[in-house]
Amino acid sequence: MVMVLRTGTLALFELDSEAEDLPGGVRRWPVHWDDLLVYGTESGSDHPCGVYRLGLSGAGRQAVQHAVPVDTKISLCGEPVYPLPVCGWSIPFSPTTDRACPDCIHLAVIS
Ligand SMILES: [Zn+2]
Image 1: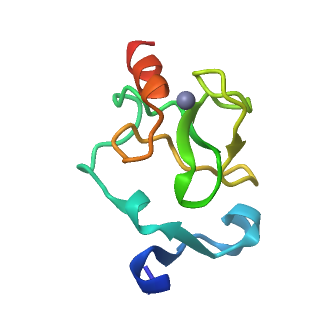
Image 2 (image 1 turned 90 degrees about the horizontal axis):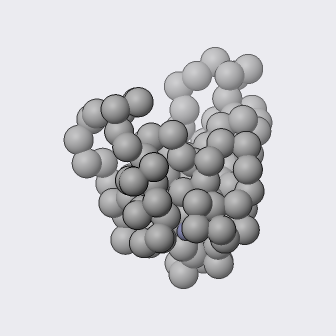
C-alpha cells in the first residue's frame, strides 16, 4: 500500500513483482478501498467463487461486480461485462462485496 487517494475512496498499492512479471508493466494500481476488504486469508481452489474473475457493468461507484468465467466477457448471469484489468492479470470475483451481483453470487455458489 502506497497511499490513500481521493479522501479515502481509493487506495494506491504497489506490486512487489519483478518488472517483467507486472501486469502490463504497471507497478502501481489504484483500487477502490471497498475492494480491499479481506475476509480471512484462505485462497485458492477451496473457495467456491475462486475460479471466477471480476467483471463490471455500469460505471463508477454504481458499477455492479459480476462473476466472469475465465476467457469470456459474459458474466454468469448473462450480462456483458468489461473485465478488470487486462494484460493477463485480473481481480477474482468476491461474493462478499457490497456491489456484487446477487445473480452471480447465486450461480457461482451452486455451480
Ligand atoms: Zn451478474
